[in-house]
Image (tube, rainbow, N blue to C red; front, side):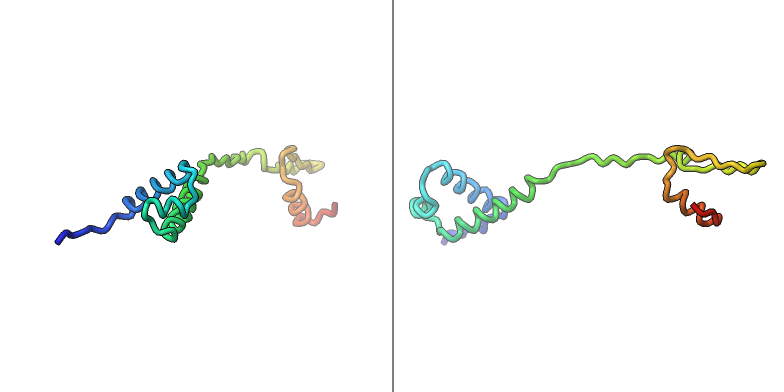
Length: 110
């Protein structure tokens, strides 16, 4: 008695991928191709859908570089000079909301 072994997942995928590719180029309908090749139409459609989904999942991944701007602390600092009269030096790049919070803390109305 001859024993048959189960196909591996990779072998099954290769088998069905080959048949799906051949059917596409044959010009035959899926059902006609399955009858000619002695394949079950339901299995053919199942594998076509499964392999199409796998290709869509793996085919859409694109590696994208991520740019994170570096904030230099000296550009974000204030300098308060306590002289007569007191002065506040603010660089142009300083966050205006941060300045408003500071002035509110100091009790200065704007």
